[in-house]
Picture 1: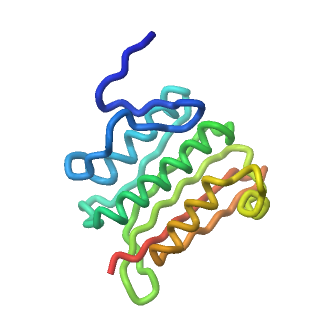
Picture 2: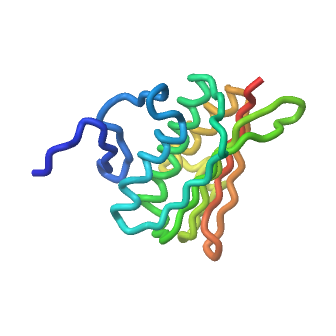
Length: 160
């Protein structure tokens, strides 16, 4: 049995799981999300991580929400998408009259029926909970998915 390194991210039943709590102070949000991509890279999926050149100031609550959303989305890519490429983009955006932070996860996998997953009784629970958490934080979730083009999930949170 392979021993776990103290800061490793592992896939347990397809769910990407940190072996220890995330230290945003040491890693930053970008570094923490990058760690989540390791199981995908080990599986041979090409991962593109796109981030601003400057360090973004994101409060801990928003960083935690974005990290957990990335964890859910990347777990879904790992478990279901059969993708060969995934792009994770973290950026600063205008969010109405305020500034915001945006997380966009795009894959070239098989796609899924997003409306059905959001109301289905046995699937998509993670996506529904993610959407609820983002809504409660004043943000928004957009899901675009098709069998021909894969899936793109965009999460935008206000920072002001």
